[in-house]
Length: 104
Image 1 (spheres, rainbow, N blue to C red):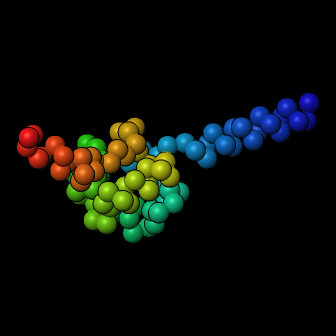
Image 2 (cartoon, helix red, strand yellow):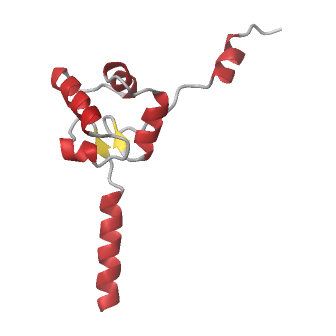
C-alpha cells in the first residue's frame, strides 16, 4: 500500500516538473522557474507581453533582446512554449544554400 502511494506521488511530481510554461500566460515565478530565465529576462518578457501577446517564437525573438535561436532552443528544451508550441529552428544554412543554387 505504502509503495503504491509513494509511486503515485513520484509520478505526480515528475509530471509537474516537466509541465510546459507558456510565455503568454506565465507569471514571473513561472518564467523564473525555467532554467536560463532570470529576473531581467522575465521582466523584459512581461513588458513586451503587455503591448500584445507573442504570436510565435520569431515574434518573441524579435521583441525580447537577448533571445536568439540558440537561446530559444535551450529555453524550449527547458519547457518554455509560445502559444503551446516548442521552438523549431529555422532550416540550416546548408539546406538554404542547396535550395538557392540553380540546378545544372
